[in-house]
Each structure stands twice: as structure tokens, then as C-alpha cells.
Amino acid sequence: MEKKHVLEICADSVSGALAAQLAGAQRIEFCANLPEGGTTPSAAQIKEARRGLHIKLYVLIRPRGSDFLYSDAEFSIMKSDVHFCGQAGCDGVVIGMLRPDGSVDTERCRELVAAARRYAMGVTFHRAFDRSNDLFRAMEDIIELGCERILTSGGYSTAIEGADVIRQLIEKAGSRIAIMPGSGITPENAGELIRKTGLKEMHGTFRSRTESKMQHRNPRLSCQSEEYSLLTTDAQKVKEALKSIISNDE
Image 1 (cartoon, rainbow, N blue to C red):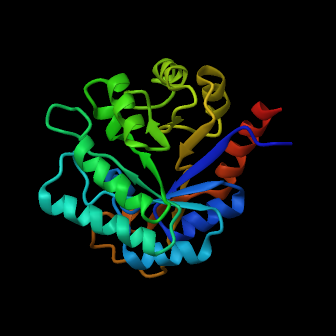
Image 2: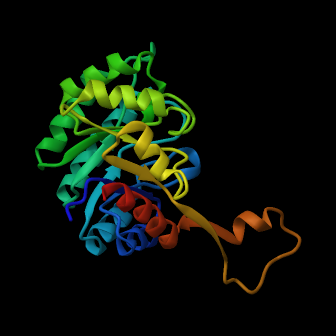
């Protein structure tokens, strides 16, 4: 049976990306520093991820956390990172920049899209979209830029909260661009989100906390729980999400 839906996993480690692939994910958004909303991973991480993945690999192009208004120096770094990803054989990049008034920074984004196209890479516009001053105007700007898809929670904290807006965006976009919901998606609510929005692509982290195998721990240091555990991609949660998606394909 032909798959009607695509599951993209956001992974902030090579091991997490490989776990998602093994569980059946069709695409990886690869990043670092998820607690900051994600930043560009190191060159070594990108190369290792590309070496181990046979599914599509899209790399987040974001030099820091915080907002999506970047200096000239930061923009220069972003352009260099796009070129590196192309040279490393990545399938695509994930970008997003805004102007101070909350509109899409089309001039700079156009440069990144052009750089990606030099290597036949696809481009996703990330959740900077949700910080824009007009989602529907921003969508038209992003379509004009030539991006493949928009990652969005509909302008809300979670995709479930923004489901009505996401549905409207999907209807308005038609076949011109994919609208991919993300944020707060779990195996339990994935099916509900499909039914409410009519989505074709879905994005999630599906992580669980694992305990460190370190035997020695210094009791005089604080932050013991954070240092000796790690949030990482949970293959079982990915499988459960895929089951929910498949049930909506039938």
C-alpha cells in the first residue's frame, strides 16, 4: 500500500537519527541544542549522520538560539553552512529568517535557497514562520522563495492547539507547498492531528529520558539529574507514531 503520510524526526544526535531511521522514519531534520530550539550541528556530526543514514537528511541552518533576526556575521555563517551541507551530500536544509517587523526576510532567505539549489538540495522553512506577523502573508512569501515545505504549529505553542489554523494553511496552500505540523506531537495525538488538519507530513522529536551508565557521581555537585540523564529519540515512540499514521492511511 502506498504511504500517504511522511514522518520526519527531529534528532539532535547521530545516535538519535539512526534510531529514528531504524524505527521507520522517512526523513531526519538534524540539529544540535534542542533545548535552545535547535542550532546547526558540527561538521563532524553532519558527516557522520550522512554516512549512517540512507533516508533523507535535512540539516537545520541556525547559528544560535533566541530570535530569527540575524547580524551580517551570522548570515555569513549560515551561507557557509548551507554550502557545507551541499558538499557533504545532504538532501536539504532547514532555514528561516525574519525582519524586525516580523515579516519574512525574503532577500536573505532567497540567497540561502539559491545556495541550496546549487547542490540540488531541498529547503524547509522552519518555525520562524510561527513568529511572523501574518502567517498567510508569510506563506505566500515562502512559496515565492521556492521552499518545499513549512514547519509550523499554526502560530500556537503546540500543533494540536493550532490545528484549525494549520488546516486553513493546508487548504490555502493546496499543491503549492507542503504544510508540515510540528511541536507537541505524540503517538497519542498524531492520529487526531491528521484528522483535524488533513496533513500529509508530520514532524516530531518523540524523545524519552535515558539514565547515564556512569557509576561514579560526585554528590557535592548540583544538577545531578540533568547531567546523568539524556533526552534522546525513542525508537518505540517513533514506531507507535508510525502505527497511528498507518491507521489513517488505510
